[in-house]
Image (tube, rainbow, N blue to C red):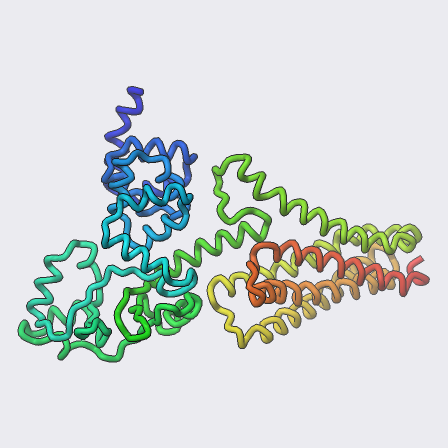
Length: 436
């Protein structure tokens, strides 16, 4: 106990100096240890650290914090993070969370949660600098100076009319260089790019990327300013989504972490291992259809792992490219067919090249050119199917409204194994009289 007390001042200095880095350290710890540290820290330092934690982890930690710490942390959350944490809390903990929110913040969170999950309204921040167009520059500068530091760090000022409709925008530099008695309406830029609050965030990401903007104002159907959507928020969401997708591709739950409990890890992984086992038996069933020819020409069994390995790897390459494209919003609907055709063509070319190399190896190894022909033709078919499947599976699942990361890899492996074995052994049956 004395050791813990002696370490507390050191931890306080660390969390006070770099709360973001300290939060990353908490994220890497066991949750019980992280909780103990948050309990030991003064409330204002606990609040600083939680602002940099992922919403799901923050929600789990907040459940077990004492009331004084919980109030300090909840008070310091911005609207978007507050909404994200609220959604991840169990229903019986949400009421306790809401008790510590101000009336204004409750209203903002309620408004934020009223937007569809994938919309611009859900990911926008409502903390923006907005002044009326008839305000003089001198008055605007005084207002900016009187505001808290978090708001004065904004680079742009949005200008609205008396009905809160967005009518212009200006950067801080233009305002500071303008004459004191000039109105904002006379120096603002009226050509403003806006994002409609119900716009899908994929479309928002595409627009910001195309225009090279780091933020855009969000408006309703009447043109009233609601908030700002920032590129960094989109990037953070994409990175989190990419991490979850990567885990899901290999049969791991998207919310599993390095130090999740053993039971939690088993519960998320075992079901997919059973699915994988079922698909493996499907591939084995295809091989069993050719038992007679394998028994007659036993050397065919030697090449089955080669066929499976090449097909799986080629398909994984296409799958990785397409999954990245989906996560990064790089694949518009009009180009889906083009992408599938491209990946299939690449698969055919790869199949021809790898097929020739494999055929030469098999010919030299077995001393039989027909064995080389069989494995070479099988490789062409398998890699063509791998390219087609690796691109078509995630795109099809996305079009059907399913999660393309959830089981694309398992479906892909099944298809490449089944088609690869069927093609290779099928050619062996056709040419068996030359293989004996």
